[in-house]
Length: 365
Image 1 (cartoon, rainbow, N blue to C red):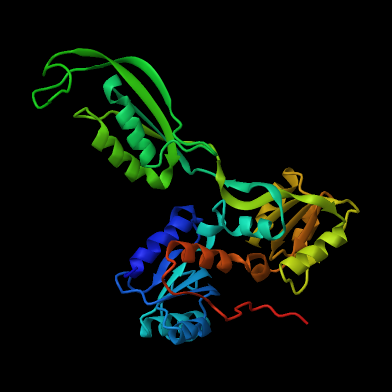
Image 2 (image 1 turned 90 degrees about the vertical axis):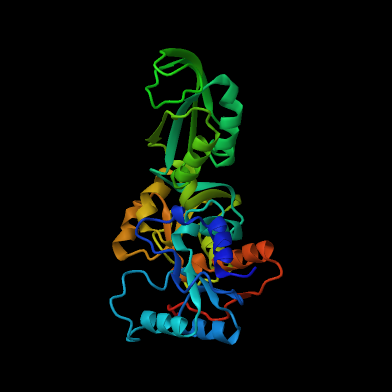
């Protein structure tokens, strides 16, 4: 490992930036990716104290969960905590990289970590991501089908849920006639050609489009490649926010909330009215999750664990579910453990450090 950009490619493997929500600010926020990497410091929030810790530990890449720069900076004068952190990072040639909702939306990310800490089983995405799947349709001769299809699979097409190399293939007759500038694979210029062709249909995640098209053009035998790309309405079952699953054994409401308080190391838990029912089906969403209350109810969850619920959000329980606000930091607290473990497996002989700074701004009596 030599350059920062090589580490960034590993981080994108862990949390593809295309998975992030449109409102978010993820990726490299500060620094030059061409610089040599000296060490990595993983934190929750890249505050000024964390940058100082990175300097002390000789780490010139800080990987944070929350982006320290969220909205645009018109001035950097050090007048607030964001500007002070950015100034210190720039002055000391330290890069800052944020993962945030790119990891929130990953099937093994924030909410799977949350679920695993609670011992949940049979987990699935609570709010699957929409408008993320595209479909390629193309046509080729039978002799080219296997090579072309395999190239598309290699580029990332054909993944549906737990299955890979998925496609639909149908036979038909293609027609064409080339002009004076053409160089047809089959037939001659100005000749009307009718030829047996195979129609190939594959789906893919939209961020892979350029890679898919590159594979298509490189491996297709025709001079002019006929193809179509569609945006699909399907939700992506393996990408999205929140998670729902089950406890191996049901608990009473009070027993469960005490269990959560212990496991997630909560200072306190704010909750809606208890319903006097056992808790077994659990919905979780790390960070601010009030927008998913209806999703949790529709999924028949007994309880929804999240953070940043406002007064009126608790009314939305409607005596159908127990809503529990366990704290924003607390709901995401084990995320940096996952990032460190991932990086250590990928680059075992490189300095990957936990930040020792507690950046939770909320304190409890």
